[in-house]
Image (cartoon, rainbow, N blue to C red):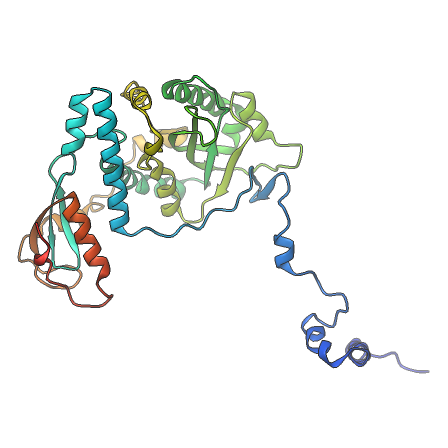
Length: 381
């Protein structure tokens, strides 16, 4: 009685017979495909297919499903030019609105910079005057950094003391014509307040921190596309299927829009920056008119960043570490003649206006990496 071949021998016989039937040019691709005569389709062709009506990942729905754009990182000089351009436009709008005090405050804000430099690095950057206006790009960026330093230790402590994961949640609402920025904000916050009081939301989330972005709609003139960016603490995942979207149905029932975005945050520091950056993000100032500026002036005192849920109670009683601002204090102790903390070269003091500071940044960016500090005193001031 013949013995049946072992699985290994059977595999080798099958592979050899298939190889003998194929042309020599196809052997290499045949072996790469695992001796399979009908190889799997190319992954690139699969990914090129149009997305389904709803895309799911981490049991969260995102709709619409547009890939995140890969934007080139701006240089510091480019960001400084953008801030100056935004500020100049705001000053012109304030003059058109006949708001002389606001125009004067904006003109003086961050007009002079005092800092220490070795020619390649900056330290102890001081700006003498601040306007504290919500739309000012300089003050908004400073406010975003301050909020990040304030909330990062609280967020990390909350995650350490609770069984929860951080997620980035974006909530939108239907756009309405003939609605002011204040009315659009109030409508969105009213819907969000209803959402946080529902049992389904409390069951799956333990609060978080939100920031609101009242920007102009791209496809409609004078219409606001106001939406919320939320760092929420999720305690329980909810399954979402096509035609069965409990969270989306709940948000729509309380007055929200059809679309929302939900993504798990793997890097908490980066996720918090992402949520808080909208406090400093320019709100389409290039498309602003004096009427838009007037509407924003009517929102004086309104909150654009706040906490909610159990995280609000936790953050109220949180005591920060005493040494969390040690780096800032150390930087402020530097004086002219001190060694640069980055390269040990002596520091000297500089005074520059906005245009001179942009030229200074361009000069630093033009220096090859690893080169010794240049003679920054040559910069005209």
